Amino acid sequence: MNPYIDYKSFLDKNQNNLSNNKALIVVSFYKFFEVVDKTKFQSVIKGIFNNKSVKGTILIANEGINGTICGLQNDITLSLTQLWGLESLLDLQPKYSLTNEMPFFRMKIKLKKEIVTLGVAGVSPTKEVGEYLKPEEWNDFISDETVLLIDTRNNYEVSIGTFENAVNPNIKSFRDFPKWVSNNLLNNKDILKNKKIGMFCTGGIRCEKSTSYLKSVGFDNVFHLEGGILKYLEKTPEENSKWNGSCFVFDYRVSVKHDLKVGDYDMCFACRMPINDADKSHNHFIQGESCHHCYNESSFSQKKRFNERQKQIELSKARNESHIGSNFKKIKNNF
Image: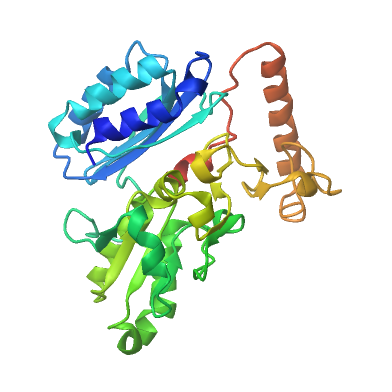
């Protein structure tokens, strides 16, 4: 789809919410392509966001770009127009949603070795990649009981929602995925070699790179959900959905539901597990310090540090200031 048409469709659909001039647009995007000089490209991207109120995080590596940004409609529209004006990004296909609160503290444009860290040299969708399946094709694909469907996200993301009949590798980070493949797929390669393998993730970047990795180790019949869960939830009516639960996102919204409406989860900033109201009523939940998932995992000194950090956040809120703390220090590495 033409990215301009897709964006206009989003604006038209949300015209009433945007008319109050308070709603913020969240834009998630990535693209694998060869970046010859990533320092120079970083400078170009920084120029696009200079003198704008847009905030977020953008990662740049030799394999491409990956980011999530947020701002008011005028600034977002201008930013997207300038991004699409770059030859390498003219076909960039972002995902859009709305929020009433800025989910980021500032704008960060960083250089990385990989835009999503797998940790296996030479693996890149710019070299080889599995077959893309659009959200409109996904239900039929996963309805095939012979398909091996794999959720490539981290275990805390899977804990609040996933697709029907999906395999959860129970990984703590994307770096663990190759080890899981080695232990569970390569050992059964003869059985699986002719089987369709489908993969999905939040925005499409991890599952796309996963197909590249699987092809590099000898699996050919691999597919992934184009645009990820976010695009699926945006495009698929809830009554037709095969998605169960909420989708974890790496910002202060914590989770989203169908139509990318903000979900019902908060987050424990000690262990980054998503938590709901019932979890917060547990005796081991202390705001900013611990929850029942991690209470026995952190030391007294860590709890003390977490508690002090929470005090600083609350002081900043009381002063109407932005506290650029370490709440998302762990989370940002999962973009």
